[in-house]
Image (tube, rainbow, N blue to C red):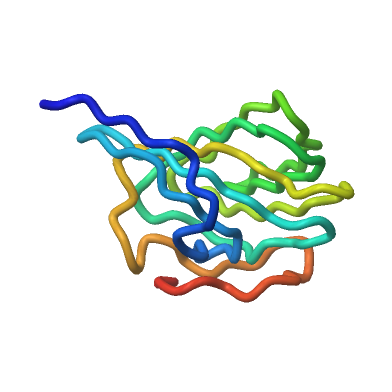
Length: 136
C-alpha cells in the first residue's frame, strides 16, 4: 500500500445529502475523511445513515448538533475543538449559529458507500439548504 497525501481543496467536491458542502479528503480500507462546511445562518437537512458511523471534529464556527436514536435525543453546542460521534442509525441535523461557516472534519467508518446511504429524516429545525444527491 502506498502513502497518500492531499491538501485541503479550495472548492468543494460535492454537496452532501444533508446539504453541507463536502471536500473529499482521503480513504483507506477502514474509513474515509471529509471536510464539511455549512454557511453562516444555515441549517442542514436531517438525515440518518444506514450502515456507517462517523466521528466529527469541529475546526471552526459556532453551531448546534442534534442527534436522536431510539429514545435518546440531545442537542449540543459545537465550536472549534468539539469532537462528537454519530453512531450507525442515528438521525442528526446541524446548524451554524455564528457569523462564520461551521467547518468540521468527519471520519466515516467504513468508507462512505455512496448513494442511498443517507435517509431523509425529520429533525427539530427547518432546513435552509437543499439536500444533496444520493438520499435513499
